[in-house]
Length: 169
Image 1 (cartoon, rainbow, N blue to C red):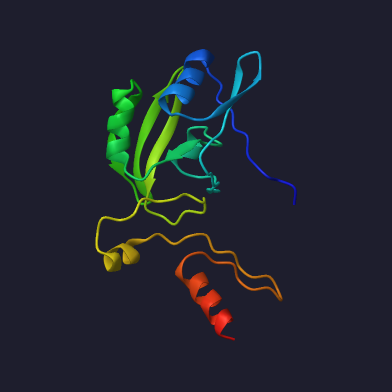
Image 2 (cartoon, one colour):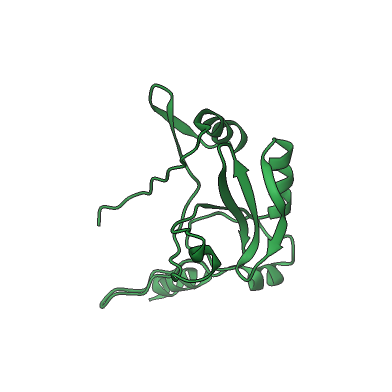
């Protein structure tokens, strides 16, 4: 399949301020598509599909942009120091710790520190705990089921074991 990326849009009454924030505060790399129309490179991404029920859906939301981070409390402090409006205090949900960032022009974006397995190829910082405890807490990474006649593609420890076993054969 030829899908090789995702392009997202923010609609805002303060486009220049939001572009400046994405460039200068968040530090996203960018290109000038034409005449100051900046297009930003985003961190690795993933997409989730949720059922059409619950308070988010009932409020009219049909899609949502969320930023992920490894340490929400540190990230909030850094963003507030740079002038980003963080709405309220972080809340612990079943899937992670969340908060809302209010970006220029009224664009609200959820930011969260996920508890769940992530599909995106995000490098996570080394755990400060012992190696044994860190391995136990490490989130499950993306696994792709093998199609007929092919081997399963996995990441992490199991793929290293498979490679080692293949070398022994």
